[in-house]
Length: 304
Image 1 (cartoon, one colour):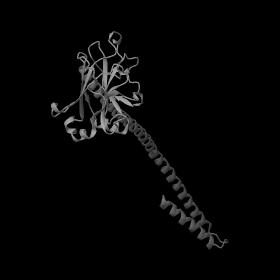
Image 2 (image 1 turned 60 degrees about the vertical axis):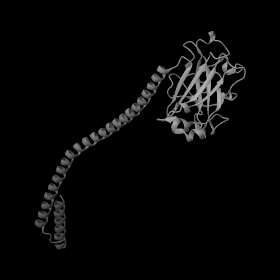
Image 3 (image 1 turned 45 degrees about the vertical axis):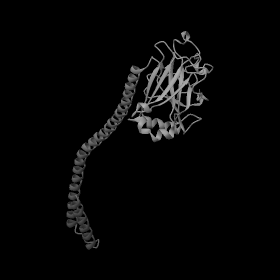
Image 4 (image 1 turned 60 degrees about the horizontal axis):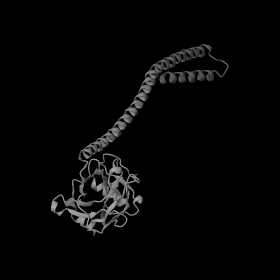
């Protein structure tokens, strides 16, 4: 098409030269008419070429338009597939976490005690310690245990970085009496001997134990009127500096074990053997969470 335009340009120049050479008086009509006729033919051929090119470009544009639409559909489909994959990954992760929690709950249910003793496995110890230090969760509660099948219901409350009085210096451990179905037929106030044990994984003889008695005048051991009574126990249960020095003896596989023993048969002495046991002051001010391996979300007035 470029060549045709060039030829037409040359023909137009040729006609102009003929007209100029004639001095506008003796125009050679035959030469001019011949040149014009040639120019008309070239113009017709050029028009034919233009129509042909337009037709051919139309044929090409149609498949290109179809391919563009198909590509747009493909891109949208790819985005939807990627979104579905991300959703599946998120759901799979949530399902995995739920299965782990369910597994722990089943294991915990199988090990729920009804003889007044309870072994508490505190998993994810490092994470829970960091939460305690940052005060995201100052304390954690164990799953419940019972003195007998229809007996007193209790749980433990642990402050890995200490309660308000011992923050950063000691672990604090408390016993909590909980509301249960058979409280109305039980004797109150509750009289018992309590022994807390921080288990040494390397040598049971070197486990740390603290013994104390319930205080019958304390509201902690009265008939519960709410989900949980005020916690009662040892604010200075174990020095944190000593724990850090011997951490490998108490923490194995990121887990810590605490055992509690309750004795309802031994007669309470007239003079308490341990004056360090007290109510947890400002109990409702604590931000607590139930431990990860709980069977139930139990009765926690201040659980978040």
